Image 1 (tube, rainbow, N blue to C red):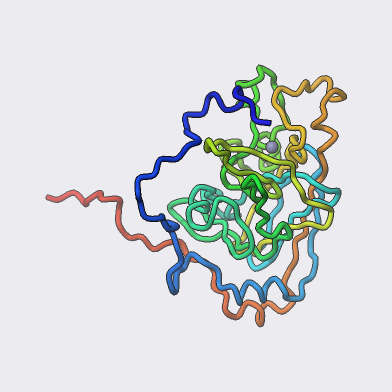
Image 2: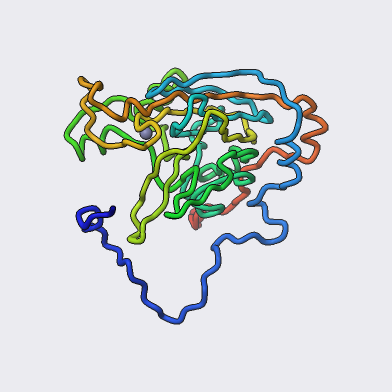
Length: 302
Ligand SMILES: [Zn+2]
């Protein structure tokens, strides 16, 4: 039950005011030939194509891992032992300044993503890093408005934990991702807003972010096609399946933590497409946007 204390600090009203306005439409609605949206026939063909498993990883509970994924391959994130939230970061493998941009992806597609949506890179690049080819949670939408694979929130981090609880905790997703990418020459400053894979979130009637327990089973997966050579990092969130999440866990006495009991591993499977030439005949490597202006700066005039 929602208590007054839980909603007291929202600036937002529950009640709506009627101004007689026309119903708004999505800001980035599709138009014919739009480069924003995936060619569904092509990505269905990729999803259904014969593939060979080339690499497999397990990300242990409460840890992070990073791995390279070559362009034109497909990778799958799994929850091999049941519900577990996955915090995902993606970079261009050759230029880590190009990385996933959650906010623009949210605008171009939706606040939660599923099959055929793309995960876009930041400026000054703005091109798909991956296109989603499979999602067994299948755009799930529950009675509270909770949906799967969230771009609204971001990773848990030790700074917000310290701020809220006063405790130092070193295994939040931000730290797990930081440790995972250090061997690739990246640092804490390269870790960015995540896609929360397998995480169910939404907004309350007062527009506040909420999280529900992760429903994924050992058979669920989230699968994407790599549009570029990628560096990918994932964290098995220390909040586990988020059924018992909280801040200020006592790291010296984890026996008392209910969160530990709902933490599970994540799986990664990287596949190559067997007949690339045939399956990818209509695919083109995404180009950066060809903006030729200079943000209004002019050449000096004599
Ligand atoms: Zn986390």
